[in-house]
Image 1 (cartoon, helix red, strand yellow):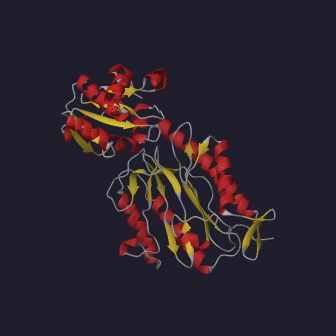
Image 2 (tube, one colour):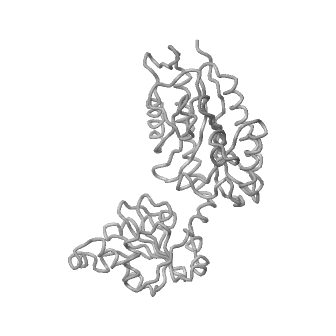
Image 3 (cartoon, rainbow, N blue to C red):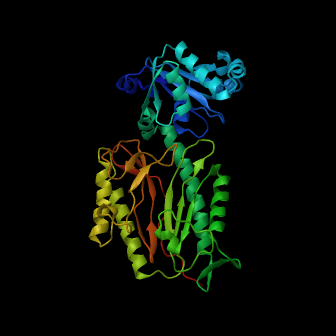
Length: 393
């Protein structure tokens, strides 16, 4: 990747600033995107209006940064007397802020743009030191929404891992037996926690991990993010929502399937068929230049035409969330597929995940992840959709 690929000159001109400054660590997707470098402790990324980039780190990380980072100019806090400043100011945070201040002075920066989540302590220090600090929307978020080929491959890898984990989870449920309305596997009640554990172990085999995987059953599925740790029930919907992240490549994937072991009620079957139809409608609309809001409204229209509720009318049941979201270094990123007017662009990776949720009945959600291409879209989710699993023997 060339340094010019990450130019934010226009954003700085619009903000009337000399540079963009952000701090972060292993948990900050923007700073990883800009630097391709990760560290457990906070470090600094600076880009000036002239396009110069600086990675500002601890001396301990210099060697690794020179190998891993895409940023050519690397400076360390020790070069700015960090240890001496700690002794003088009796506070590591003040010493660190002082080093940032001196870095800005060295780069002749007077007005600096920072992201909305920039630490207020550093911002206050810089203002007191005479700098103008301007909070702005991250200029990297829009860049991140347009995926390069290597990013697409990283997402595809995570998706493969997610599908293997989903297959393992569904196989476990399919192999269960019913006893008094509860699913049992190998003589023990099959719990949501057990299914979640199988998902986690499968992902680890692929070098991936997942936090907050959703395994939800029965009444819990009426809540879009409901979870079930205890026994899973027969004849009830089970929502499986897996969003794995590659531990090495850092990119996410996302998918959801709803399954049922036993007999499905007519209401649940109708809900499933409607959600499936809504997803197919949305998938058929995905292409560059289409407003995301049109796709979302088409889903809402289909649900309402079939007698289901949507939040457009203020309902708290039925379809109660957006149709999808971007996926990348964060599980939720641009572009959103909801009521906003963003136009889809080739290179976007988005989910299409309509759902219906009714207390007393349950919930149904299906989620595929797709790449917007020049002519339409490529569905990156290959796993079949099958609601009712094989009957009990």
